[in-house]
Amino acid sequence: ASYPQRNFLQTGIQNHSYWKNQSFWGEALKNAIKEELDEQERFGFLQSENAGERKTRENNIIFGKLGTFAHNMMAFSIPLEEVKSLISKFSKHYELSSSQKEILINTLSVTSAKEKKKDVGDFITQIKPSIESSERILKEQHVKDISEPINETLKAEESSNSKEEAKQEQF
Picture 1 (cartoon, helix red, strand yellow):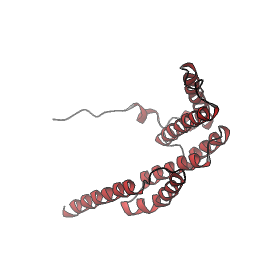
Picture 2: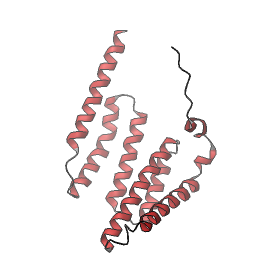
Picture 3: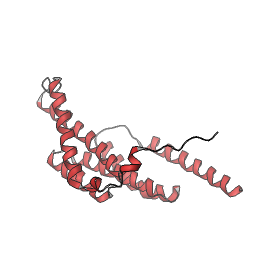
């Protein structure tokens, strides 16, 4: 049975010049952060916390919004350097820690490398410095070692791609 081709809204609008406007993304991000902080305030989450807890919650909200917007910007084909610039600008403005900023930028680098990968070997070579940097940051913050799950995932992906290449060579 033949199924009709699916058309997604993003595909139809992603090349519009509006998305290439850096000020649009900056204003949208600023509004999203303000709305989320206002909502937290309305529900009393920020009022019941001491100054340190409040700052941590605010930073986590901003960190999350930056990550979401960075991902969306990449999905709309915004150049990596422009996305990194927006992250740097907002990280500085909202006083995120350097480790939070670095994790966001490393994640973007990994995402960008994965999208551009030619084969698994190139991909692993490209992302290894970002993974090691993020792992170092997380270790400094006393977060559980993440290298084992990441390495297992990369090995599984490499194995899967090797099997696919072997199947293709058979034909």
